[in-house]
Amino acid sequence: MTAIVSSFSPIIVSGMGGLCAAGANVPDIINTIYSGSRTPVVSEYVRADHLEQYPMFELPPSAVPDGYYEGPESERCGLLAIVAAYEAFENAGLDLDNLKEYRVGVCIGTTVGNAMNNELFYRDFLSNHFPGMQSIKTYLKSNPADMVARHFHLNGMRQCIANACSSGAVAIGQAAEWINNGLCDIAIAGGSDMLCRVIYNGFVSLKITDSRPCRPFDKNRMGLNLGEGAGMVVLESSMTVRQQKARTHAVLCGYGNCSDAYHISAPMPDGAGLEMAINAALQQAQISHDDIAFINAHGTATPENDKVEGILFSRLFPQTPFHSTKGYTGHTLGAAGAIEAIITIESLKRQMIAANVGFSDPDPEFAVNPVTENTPVKGDYALSDSVAFGGNNAVLVFRKTSEA
Image 1: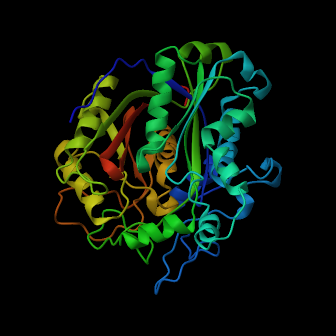
Image 2: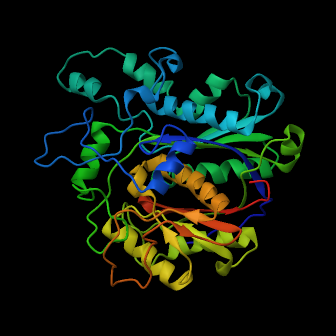
């Protein structure tokens, strides 16, 4: 198991957009997490015949305005990404009509994508009924990176990342590497995911969902609450930022990615893979553990995930405040790393992190605890980590700027 540390010039985050159950845009999301409110509900749209129904953080159908639909191939996951991308481009001050002047790359992570929406097709097929091919045609045209590129007429390279729940963070790191290697001038990057019955039933069958609002890092945590949404950032080199005179929210100065190759779903118990990803990101940023002002942890509220992070933070960051924000957003799967990157940047700008909602009882297995109230922080650097099925670990390090 190795983590490759490549050269990494700082990349500017000039725009941000996002939507999830915590809010329809970035300002609303940030206001929600600082207010301490959260709204997991038993879904009206995603139901199954379980003895117990598990709450989720879902978006209403109105989250995607009617004008965004372009026909039967307009699948929800890609549409959520388009909504977030609109906000990010606008926030960056980019003229959509002039994007063709630049090589704009698109890199989007997802777990569900639009691949899990064909339940009726397979039911008909297995019942010896010919279901028609529209759902297959839709699936073949619904890659979220392709949908975003088509919608905005972008001519740069594009990629869809499927690294489970680290996908959104990996997509941001991958897009930054494109810019560093001269493959594009600007990139729109992040993650998008949606809820559906297949995913709901899958997580319930794994016995890692909580029938109550989730409790990240709490001794009595029982599992996660699923969520949906999208988070997108505009990444630019310092050259294009100067040309555009764009605002600068933060600098992405470190990215680490490492696979445990340990288990199909459980993380490596000693956190060795996550530690390697953390060290790779810090090395790229040319800083030490002590320089990190705070950590936005993956913090799913599952017993094993939180244990690994808690033990690792106890050893590597014993004095560093940390929190999980999944108590406000739910676990948005492939979108989580991107939404949490945006929350990390906004928290770094404000020098304040939100309370780790749901936590009350310390876990004796690790020596550190998340913050239990909105907490001032002091420093220029923040770390956001994502820990995914298959042992996929991704870490992003951001630096505060004077313009933010």
